[in-house]
Length: 162
View (cartoon, rainbow, N blue to C red):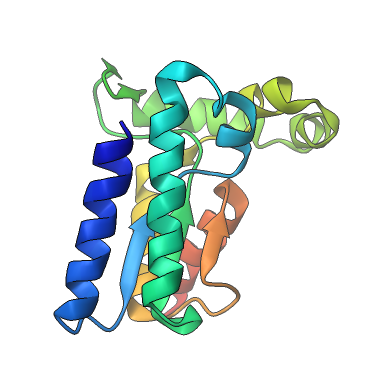
């Protein structure tokens, strides 16, 4: 997992820089996820690879020239899947409404890691794509890293407003 999520992404970042690509958008993983499950043997390489790719991006690009999108659970489409795990837009919209409600968000903010992750609001694939477009176009200037659903939605809204 480290090879696919780290080594190959590092090579892509380095090749893009060498080719003169001026801005790089990278989809990583929300900080809360590796904090909770990052030490599990099955997932360790995945998270280490994501971390390595982010470090390479910061080494090769100036702060205004890269954009990192860090979603937790992404939902969307019209079919369930186990590999990768995915739920439909209809089901995900319901989950997002419940887990994005004020009381659940307040509980998640005070809960220990595994519970907070379980209660984390999922993010739609459309919002992740919108945040990536905002990063590529430079239309979101609040930060060059959007970490979690709320930040991703704000970045995606910047594209809609542009």
